[in-house]
Length: 257
Ligand code: VGL
Ligand code: ZN
Image 1 (spheres, rainbow, N blue to C red):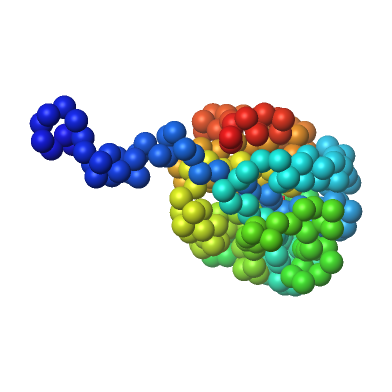
Image 2: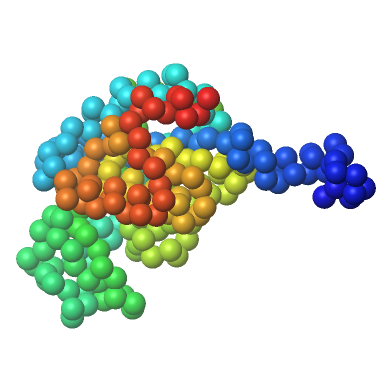
C-alpha cells in the first residue's frame, strides 16, 4: 500500500484495506445461533429435566427472547434437530443395525443414554436417546414461546438416518455439513453468539466447531441448559481452551453495539 510512496494511502487503497481487514476488527458482523429449542427437549420425549442435571429448558426462553428484542444482531439462526423415523440414535432402532464386537453393551441390554458401537464399517460409537425430534412431529417444533423472527433462518440437522449430528455445522462423522457455514459466510459473519439446548451436547459441539471454523465465538451461559453437570463443566473448559468466550446474556448488548 501507499503505492505513491508519499506516506498516504488513497481512497481506493483504504477501501480495499477496510473491506479485507479493518472492518472485521472494528465492525464485527454478529450472528446469533439458537440451538434446538424444541418441544422434545423441554417437555417431550427427551425432556432434559429427566436427565442427571435436572435442568428446566423452559428457563432459557425468556432470556433468549429478551436478546432477540433488545440486541441488533446482523443475522439470527434457529437450528432444529430433525430426525427421520429410522434414525440411528433412537434406542428403539438399536436392533435394526448390527453392533461391533467391541460394543460395551449389546442390543438386548442397551438402555437409554448408553453408548453402543455399531458395526459399520467403520465401527461407530453412538449414544442412544429416546425417539425424539422426528421430522414434522410436535416434538420437533420450536417451543411456542420462543420468539421466531421473520428474518431468522432455520437450519436442520440430523437428517441422515445413519449418522447423528450434535453440531449445527457438521454431523458427528463430518460426512456432510449443514447450510450454516455457507450462510454465515454469505452474511460476512465474524462473531457467533451461541445458546440453547442441550449445553453439553449440541450447544457444546456447535461452539467448538464455530471456533474451528474461525469465528469469534461467544457462549451465552444463562441461555443454555444441559444434560449432565460434569459434561457441562467439560464443555465450558473445552470452549475456553479453544479461545471461546463465555458470558451472561446481560453482557451481550454492550458487546454487539
Ligand atoms: C441433542 C441429544 C440428541 C441436542 C440432540 O440437541 O442437544 N441431544 N439429539
Ligand atoms: Zn437428536
